[in-house]
Image (tube, rainbow, N blue to C red):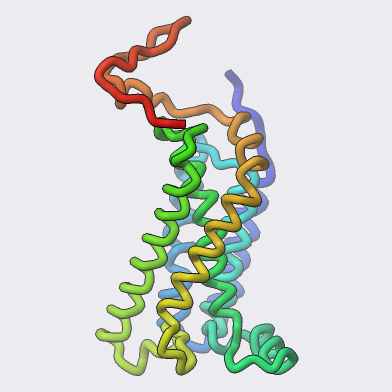
Length: 233
């Protein structure tokens, strides 16, 4: 079957590359910039290399590009000093720059669609009632791991890691960060699942049935699931 040309992912990848170049131009702290944008530096090449075998939905591509922009802006200015966040802080009378909170909301909102797409296309969870809660749990787990990485950076870098931590004097910053990621993931699953499912239906599923059933797929009939217990729906 001939692959359908999809210009949107290519345009988004090009825009992210341009954004990375601009973000790397004179950041406030070079180490902080690298730590914040390393996810883009690693993730974009992986997506490009896997684009033929595992093309992503347009929805996920757009969300990943937006998330990349959030990371690049935070890396360039540091999360505690993003100008837009400072403006909102002053206009709304907030105690701190809210950009860090927004970044952690996105840390749940965007990965939720990524996790959902991976599970839907590579596991028997598609259509299962377990897909939504497991997606949210995976995002919360990733947020907890990220907080551990921040803790490690603080131990290794000392005060030099303050810009990366962006705690802004809040002793509950770690808990707030994970809570924001939890809220972002939950909202994403509730709001975007139907749109995501429609786009997923247009993409091929990976053949993982044999991995779970122990039998090779048979053309024209259902693959045997002997030896496995169907997931509840």
